[in-house]
Image (cartoon, rainbow, N blue to C red; front, side, top):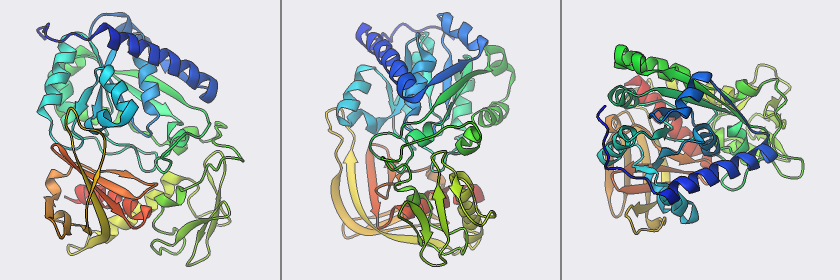
Length: 405
């Protein structure tokens, strides 16, 4: 690649990156016992002045700490969801680090140009190609465009797998963290010769295999513990479970007295600090990923009917991104959000939206407050649902529908 000299990262951004990497590494080691294992090949890349990519799995928001440690002492430019740059103090910090903002789940030519400039000027590039935090601690789909980008850039690629981060900061916990243990593995995946000789399809296949993870199985038997008796570690975990694994009824599982209880059949489960379920019936799932796997199996059956659909009452809020815009959503109506084989639909008194399934790579969601976010160009629409478990079902259903197509 011909090197371009049009990109200059400020000394302040590099210094801030180094300070943040060291401070968070020390803090995460003290509080979370964080350790990072790095391949010898990647250590050589880090000692050089050449560009390479770090592609990370994304089970949790805490993965950013692991990414910082993985790149240090090199400065790395991270690709970040554009809306994060308008989120108070965090947004100011990201802008100061000179990250690359990308519109989530929508084509972003400006972001791709910045990625190319970053690599051609010899910087490390950091990305999380899943594009959103995992619902259940397993890999989200990775768009084929990532493999095309790797082929175009032509620089070495390392993959990063964080362990335990999902339970330190699960998607149903909006504030704070659970104290627990985390670690990470940084491994070489492709060198320059690999990228020249491999096809785009081969790159995509190897990348998806390399980034596969199942946090529950990764930590099984390792003695990792999360939370404490005084600070609830299972609070809101029921928001992920919209279908009882015992009786199959929808929206009947709730938390009661630190237990999970089905209001229909009486099924009960506890959750240990190792984040595995205790249950009398051994045929029931013993971890979050296994339970959600049963829900996904149900959706595969449900959506085989060509006329199938799901529909929820929703409050809508919108935010338009801009350089001087604060991260605020303005309430903008009450209506109905639905999903069927044709795509996503929303209607209220102000507008009617129909988004074809083919143009929805994904949606992000919050499983504590119960909303899903649809991102189109510079406008983010956030749909608040009646029940957080509906957000989990919407995301699972969308992924199943995309598979069926």
